Image (cartoon, rainbow, N blue to C red; front, side):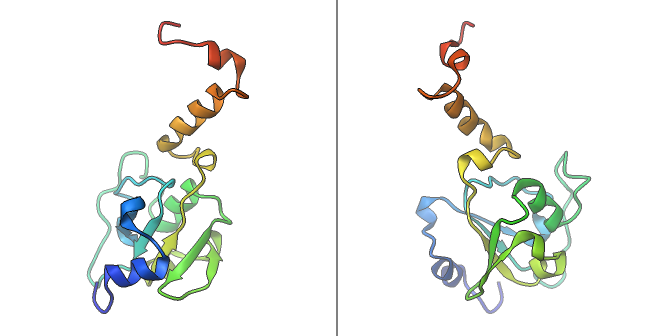
Length: 142
């Protein structure tokens, strides 16, 4: 992280790591599992960094932008750090993502349906008092 520190980026993003946070280099997004329901600090690639072997299921998505668009809505806000204005994810290319540090705010739980981490929110919504009557009646035995 030449010329920048994680503390500086956290302060610029207004994040407290104790509240949950993920930090990933842009070139590693295809090879690292991350949860869109937590804020993501996306770091610029250092000179000489190359992509790692993609995770199973991400072979069709070879770029950081493709992975992010599969998990976040195209109009999801993303902000350049330390002092950039918010932009939409769809407005950025791979060179933009790899060339700077970015903050992707967390997705609300019910918007995190493209990720396996969204299953808990779906179950909670279905079993809520105003949720699905059939789901509320189910037990481990049924």
